[in-house]
Length: 164
Length: 430
Image (cartoon, rainbow over all chains, first blue to last red; front, top):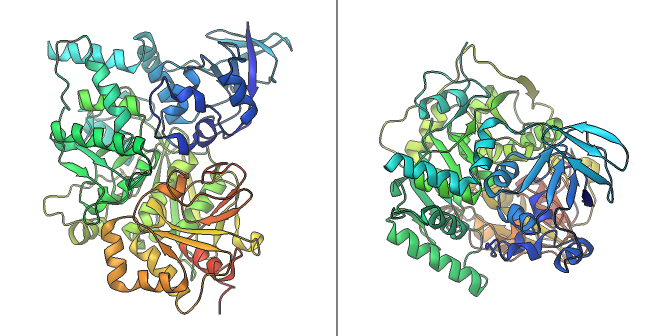
């Protein structure tokens, strides 16, 4: 069971996910407190642990557009959220894969806050509406990074392989 | 079949005779740029080496650039401490392309890279800043990455698992009318193809209008290519690129342009004639919410901002000074100007632009990114409206989620500073 804890429209920028004025904070242990900081209600629920771990943010098209700031990914990962969006902006998607934030591209998704989703590698079942939506799998090149446990581990393996 | 500029550069950097859109490659990186977020890159870089017998060393310190620009001079002890950490690290790693907080060689990263001669046609450039697309203005393949990806580049010298993008070809013809220019063109294009119209793709700019455009204008175009989602914006190198590199960037060694093949495959070709283009403006809260300025003329603004990596160069300050000469910034409107680099600032001083702008009532600030993203001076009050030559207008961008940001050219910003309301420079003033 994965409940949609937050639902947003198209073109949600990293300025909205992690406002620029908190960019001096970089540690993944500290960034989660500023996730969606300008939405006092949702940010408040996140900070007081009222949002269940494994909850889903349902996004529209071009989720994570704008700045390359990695805090926009680490702040969501810190709350163990999954992002299911119709599409993602390139840098955000890559940062999510690199850091291990669970992101699912589901171009036709129709869902609202409170809906209960079942997410697999191939489809999203909206248990509330009974509808099924296909998932676009990540390219194999990206899956390699996820399988390695993120880009740091992936790079470490490469470094050791090339230097020995 | 032939290759686009992006395909050619990525093929060469990956040691392959040919690549096509969709292929996954590992290009060697020619230049890896970071700003203050190098503090995070350092953390991730050191983590890569944890548990290994290896000593953390940047693969080639001569190919790494670090420029302080986002919060300069530091606005807080936290920032100053992060900058100190980065300064110590680049010293220990012998990074030579380090631009500290200085009036001689300091400035905004996307101005420092080209004006220092670090950007070359055909190069692969990565930066931990989304506006790294700027450097395609000199015929490079330049794209933004996150801090962890940069740490990986520092360790390996290659960008891992890069997908070769398909390319949109934008062919621009016609001559701009007075007070219309590159910023209006790129806003018009983003409005046309939307904020995600080029997501995961490259944009190549062609046509007589681009050939006639100077490098400053091309930097404005490629800078904002990312606002249409583009991985990279590219102007194929030409005589103007060589002129800029020789005359303005002091480059003396060989220049090796990479040009597209005549039979290159483009995903789509978009033709734009600018002869009748009017001043454009991006309205809150997305960059693709673009209208002719005339449609929103008369809207009251409390803050005018001219500067940034998008429009903080000498010709931008020149047009602003020419419009504001012998005029005053309207009462209850404040005007902030921040040149793109110390060099631009000094040139603008010598030309008299800084004096003209200050006499009109503008506050001329040191070079930096601060006001654009609301992190260092120039924040907006509740419910206020800003008109800015920067590149983003997302909710909260200038530090206040209840404020509004409109994006425009320096000419529109300067004309509006005089009236205190959004003004079409073709109509307004006298």
